[in-house]
Length: 189
Image (cartoon, rainbow, N blue to C red; front, top):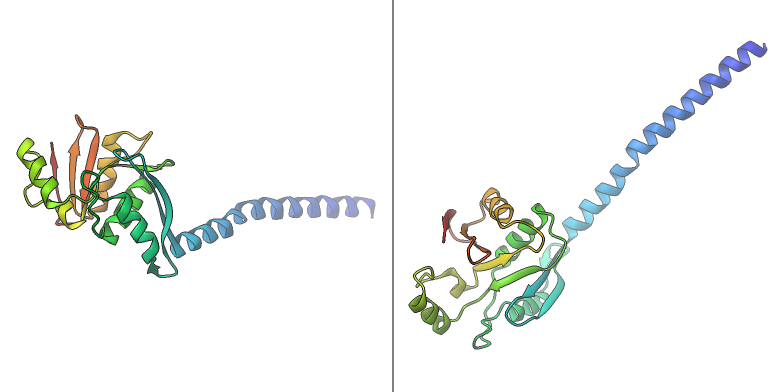
């Protein structure tokens, strides 16, 4: 009888141990699922404009819709800093920047080198450099030049290329990556 009880206790102990081990493996999955669900309900961006010093950290999409107030704040931070002209930035471009940042594991605000560019500014820049397109997508709020702090530029470019969201320009000497939501293409400047 004692031998049987000992065997049963050992079996219960092993069964309990197995349950604890399985629970430890299963427990993270509901938490991960909850995080994915939250991420699916909200999209946020943290931005830093290198020319104005302005920062913004905002949820710009929630519960299946873009948030107009947040988009207005983003448009302001991404305005043409030379003359303060503001234009609506393509929400698809914001989603692309968010995905790039996520893919490279960015944990600081994405640095903005250039967002919207007014026709006057673009004309001046095109006269100074043949690296500036006369009909730049920056004019339409569909292009952005970025850096992700703490991440190598080549990794930012690779992430953008993998996403196939539009054009990707690699400017290692100027330390930024251009991304746009036009046709898929790539170049180096």
